[in-house]
Figure 1 (spheres, rainbow, N blue to C red):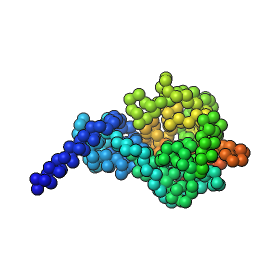
Figure 2 (cartoon, rainbow, N blue to C red):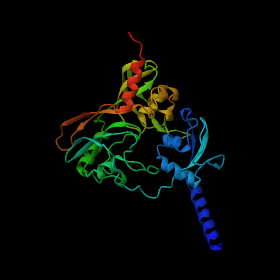
Figure 3 (tube, rainbow, N blue to C red):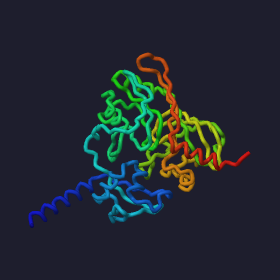
Length: 332
């Protein structure tokens, strides 16, 4: 009995030491997540799967004023909590993660273009235990290039977990190198559609504002003076009461670029609670993620040198939002 107690004491001590060595992040709960269960709220804020958040809770890695949360706890808007981030033990493993109804838009010996659903990451990363684009492609029997980090095989650009639409993945080393260079040279056409709060004025323009990690909350990004050059072009397609539908073309491809730029202009994406969206608008429009879709993608084919272009229709949740707006629009 004494041996068991001693073993338990050693295990607890080791766990405390391991937690003490982790990176600490202070997370502020956005207004729209008030009274959500902590696993659901942090899953949306951090982009981790709910099971990953539950694991952190069980480890005692999520606290407020030093007091650990339990799985049944709920959060309040503006609440600040501390998260001891998962330790990174080498690169995340690339595992097949089948996705029902994976849409392959185009496929040949060099590239595969897919229409990514919401809730799917581009590739494995620390803390993410959900499906990935690369895992789904491998599970479906497609080849991917082995260049780059092991967990990012074939990935030449990424979409956020909550963003839907078009992604291209390289299937061999030549294609990987060629496509990466095209993205560096900014010759790839990337067109998104987004629904933002308020009416854009002017109705078309360019946002040229540098982006980097948020100075206080590094799970987010922000416009900062010494950030990386970031350029976004937009045109308003349609106005509805309190929101605008935009077509956006990216000249650069920074993490969260569209979300950060429009939030900085006080026109956050509808449903993007992490970047200041009004939760009441999201609820009224029945959207639970940022309203953002990678609508068009065009690039020079790595083998033929000819431009290939693809487009993607809105998924059901984004279409539903537009239907609600149309139903409630003033009749002329």
